[in-house]
Structure formats: C-alpha cells, structure tokens
Length: 320
Ligand code: ATP
Image 1 (cartoon, rainbow, N blue to C red):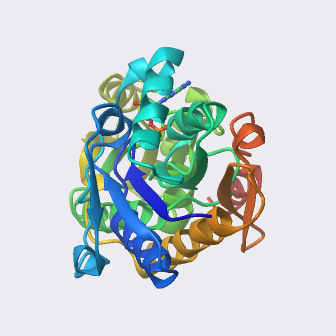
Image 2: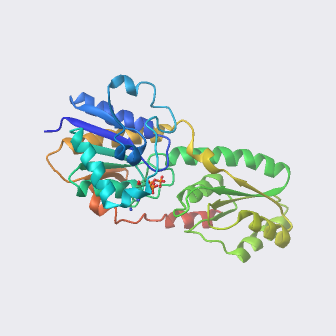
Image 3: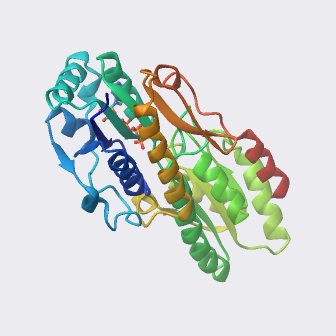
C-alpha cells in the first residue's frame, strides 16, 4: 500500500517544473497520500534534504519559472555506492515512491534508484527537448517562445541597420530549439546537429540576397557547434554583410511557463501518481507520443535516443 510519495526536480531547470511539482503534490494529496519534496535534486536526496508538504506549499507556483524546490547536479550519483545510499535514505523516511522531473541524466539516476528497490517515475522536464522517450518535454514550449520574442526584437534592429544576425540558442546535442525557432521566425539559415553548416551554401545564399537588395538576415545557431564570432567574420569577408552575433544564453531558461507547458505539466504530474498507485511495480517514465500521454519502463526509456525532427529540417529548406 502506498502511503508516502516524494517529488524532486533535477538537471537544468525548466519553466513548468513548478506547475508539475504542484500537480504531483495535489494529485497525491487528493488520494490521501502523504506528500514530500526533496530539495536540490539528487544531491539533496543524498543529503536527506526531504520535507513533508501540504497543499499550501503549492499555492501560487503554477505560473512561476525555475523550480522552487531547486535543482543541482551531482556527477557522483553514477557511483553505485551513492545511489544505494540515496535509496536507503528514502527507505529511512519510509517513502514508497519517488517522482523525478528532469532530463535524460536524471532518468539514469532514477533508474539506478529503481535498481535499488525504489519505485520511481520520471517526468521529462528540460528546455532542450532532447529526451529519447518523449516527443515533448516540459519547458520546451516556453523556451521556444522566449527565443522567438528575442529574435523578433533582433529582427527589428537588424532590418533597420541592414545586418546579418547570428543568434546562438541552447540545445547542444539536439537542434529542436534551433529548428523550431528557425521555422517560427522564417530565418534565412539554421545551423544545428541535424542541419550542419555548409559554408559555401550559406555564403552563396547571402550573396544572392545582397544582389537582390535584401540586406538583412537571421541565422539561428545551436550552442557549442562552432565559434559564432569566427563565422560572423567569415560572413563579412565572404559576402559583405555587416554581421553581428547574439548569444541568448540562460535567458532561455527563465520566465513564466507557457500555457502549453503548464497543461503538459498538469497531465504528466497527475499521471505520475496514477502510475505509483497502480498494481504494476515497474518503474516508469512518462512521455508524449502522437499527442497522447504515454508511459514506458524506465529501463527501456534510458536506452532510447531522441528522434531528430528531419521533417522539420526539410520544411525549413523548402520555405527558405
Ligand atoms: P538537462 O538535460 O536539462 O540538463 P538532465 O537531467 O539530463 O537535464 P544532467 O546534469 O545530465 O541533467 O543529470 C542530472 C543529474 O542526474 C546529474 O547531476 C547526476 O546526479 C544524475 N545523472 C546524470 N547522468 C547519470 C548517469 N549516467 N547515471 C546516474 N546518474 C546520473
């Protein structure tokens, strides 16, 4: 019989984590479960930073960015001794199940807890949308909207000054933020793992634009792929475009979650409690597939690679 459930947030913070924490706590309380939070992610778990909470804890957090129970990184969690200690702390608190909101790394940590006899449920929360077992993560929609707001503003100034703007966005292993932003902004170029830079193609295109008197361009670039300042210099040399760079950085993580992220958080949070309460002892992760909320065994989920959005890439090429 399930009496106590704990929830934590881990990895990079993402807008909508609070809405999800709220949903988990409220769905648990509605079923008469004692609800706990773990502060500071898996690190806080190892340190026993655990507290029982009531409904008041969840007041007025649905629209707040970041995570009020905080997040942290603890690389040592990969050490089996550390995950074993974390599992024994949950057992000391007599906690029957743990819901963890985070990305792929968090899911691996949760899977290690499952191997130590803890029932866990993973909820994908990360702005990059890079989790293999789901088409959509909590935080992606808000981060994309933030990028689009910034690019809209940069477009005004790059148009006024007839410039090319290279805009670096997050998502080092997964270009979803770059691809969706490029599509949403009608950008002149996108460079990401799924759509690598072909210098000559880009330069040819920019030269052609200049020749046709279109003197401003937006190019979206995923972080950590190349040095955008070097590329800007090359563009100036090769095409004559006055070129500026902008790194959006951690701005992309912040802000009040979009309605889409809040609704996704509510659906996934409530589902996590259903999974905990079910007779099936398997530890699971929650995801979205074809618009439906699904679940699958965590041991399977951690082996899955994110399906890159090749369809989107082709669409961008077609519409440029
Ligand atoms: P994001 O991608 O948004 O940063 P994430 O959950 O992937 O989210 P990570 O920093 O990769 O973020 O992982 C969060 C925490 O999960 C790590 O600090 C570590 O404690 C734990 N973790 C990561 N990888 C593993 C692993 N291979 N085995 C066990 N635990 C892991």
